[in-house]
Structures are given as structure tokens and as C-alpha cells.
Image 1 (cartoon, rainbow, N blue to C red):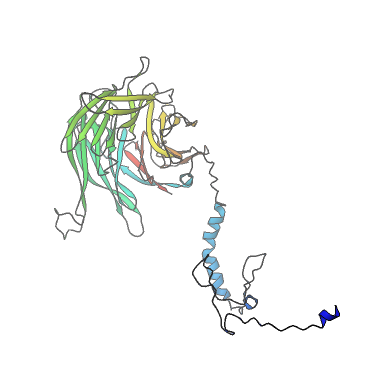
Image 2 (image 1 turned 90 degrees about the vertical axis):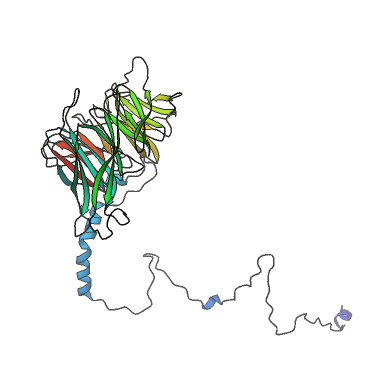
Length: 460
């Protein structure tokens, strides 16, 4: 061992392949061709510290001076708004388990807005339709009245009035002003706005005529028929076309498409009309059901270009699909929906929880919600509106609120989601028998109270 320890071998030097002092940039080809970021000495990096109890940064700067007087003035200014928000309580969470989805409409504010008077008329039933939006989310309105009829109408001095919303300064306040009145040879039984062109609307008079009207604006920019210097805008109602039905007056009208109108009659007849320069009869269908079921139609609503729902006198409801409009090969499929006990007074199409649905109401105030997307699964919801009987109803845009005209110009609201019942007080006299809601859900009109209509505004 001592011999080995004393042995000294030659020193072998391994020279580096790179020159000493040269810095090489290493690139890892398997990851990226981009150069690596520059090294940074983390030991000298500054890190902002947070206080764990308040989750706020600790300020290292010098405390600034606060003007306490200005702060007090600002606090007094915002205090009312803060107090109002606190009184409303915490915002409820949408857990996704609500059977009727969006609850925004349940928190809407409804206020009595404006009274419309139909002077010089002795009729007791109101009728109206909302047309296209004109200003500040307010649509144009057409109204008329009628008397109860058992047979032929001999009321020759009827009128159809046009009300246009006009903005009143300051702010966004609008007022509905009468701008046009056209004479009618008979009472109107029903009005219907063309959902595909809201400047066009249809009406059926008690003498059996079907009218198509156009509400047009004269004086708008781009109107070649008017002097460009004209500053005022006027509105006119033009009758586009008219035809006479062989089945007397219609109890309901609705539009399948922009140029196709359906009229529904008491004897179960359903007529398809082609709307153009003339109102042309296309074909008719007959509601044929079981022998012990009534076919006297009382209400109807269209769902698509070939599908509609009808309600009849004995409380039955049917969804109908026209598979052929040809006069030679006309064909209609009929499927029954959940039946009511009493006569169907109102049918409404709506959207509940994002799905298409139809809301039906009978003379007792019982309300059913029918699923249209999946007709095999009927919604279990049955809502009983408190008496007295509600002949007509309307619904909010999402279907969560049912509106009904009350006594003395009031509006009754029923929340389908939680069952609450609220009443918006009115200042008129009598019992309302008509109601309709605008498509955007912001406006409701009820009537007729002696000779007055009542408009309500819904703020979402």
C-alpha cells in the first residue's frame, strides 16, 4: 500500500470544448425554439404583501390628507340610495332549480300610467291591440269598443281610434295621444296584430267582414311622398283589403305567417286567408272531434306557420297542425291537451324556462300551463285565480306573472312561481272585461270601465 501511495502519475488535462469566458445560449429544441427568459434574482424581487384579515394591500406610501367636510357632504348625498338598496335585502341567488326559470319579471314594478277615454259611446266591452314600437319602448295603440251581441249588429256609429306615444320633455315620459279616428259600419269582435309586421293588423266586425289595416307614418325621413322640409310626423290608418266570411264574425284572429291569416268561428270553422292587395279565401277547415265533445270555438292562438291551439266551449283544448293547405287535399291533425271544466276564455303563447308553452284560462279562473316542446309531459301546474270569475288574462313575457283586470280600474297580478297575489289599485269605476299586454312586456291596457281604458307600465 505504501508503494502505491508514493506513486505519482502524469497529470492528464482535459481542455474544454468551448472557449473560457464565452457565454452560450442553450435552446431546448424539444420544447420550443424561443430563447429562455432572462434570469432574475428572485432574492431581491419585491413582493406586495396582503393583510390576511382584510384582503387589502398595505399601503407603503404616506397617508394623504382627507377633507372631512367634503367627505361628510358626499356621504349625505349617497346615503338615501344606499339605504334603499339595503332595505331591498340581499339579491336572491338563482340556483337553477326554479321550475319557471328567470324570476326577473316577478320583481317588476307596475304602476298605473294613463287613462284613455272613449267619449260618446255607450258600449260596455273594450277591444285593443298594440302595434309597432314608436318611441321609448312604447308601441302605437289602436282601441275600439263593442256592445254585447246575441245576433246581428245594428250599431252603425262605431269608431276605431289610433293613439301614438309622444315623448314629453324633460326625461323619458311619454303620453298616448289620439291622432286618428276612423268610422266603422259595425262593432269589432276582435283585433289581431301581425307579429311579422306590426304596422299591419286585422279585425273582424260583427257583420262578418274581415278587415286588414295598415298604420303608416307620414313625414319620416326617407319618405319620398312628403316634402323633405316637413318636420312633423303624422299617422294614418289605411284599409289594405277586406272580405266577407260565410261563417259570420270571427271569435279569434291570428297570423300564421306575414301573408296568411286564420279566422276562427263559433261553429268550428277555421278559414285561411291570403293577405295581399286583396284578401283572398284559401281554404277552410272544420274542427271535428269526438261525438260527445263540443266544437264551438271560443279562443285560439297560432304557434307557427302551420300549428295553432284552439279552446272550445266545453273546456277542451286542441293543438292542430295543418299538413296541407291545398283545397283539394286539405288535411289537419288534431291532438287533445289537458281539459278544463269550464269554457275556455283565453289562450296565450309564452316561453317558460326557455321552452315554448301555452297558458289557458277558463271562466272559473283556473289556469293551466301546457308544454308545447314536449307534449307527452304535461306541466303539473294548475293555478286557481281567486273569484270573482276572470274572463280574460294576460301574462308577462316569461310567463311567470298572470295579469287580470280587476274592479275600478285595478290590475290583479298572480305570481305562478310563488303563488303571491297583488293588486295595483285603480281610480276608475266598473269591472274590466278586456286586457292585452304588449310584446315587449312593458305595457298593459285594460277596460272597459264605463267609457275608459286604463294603461299600466311595467318597469323591468
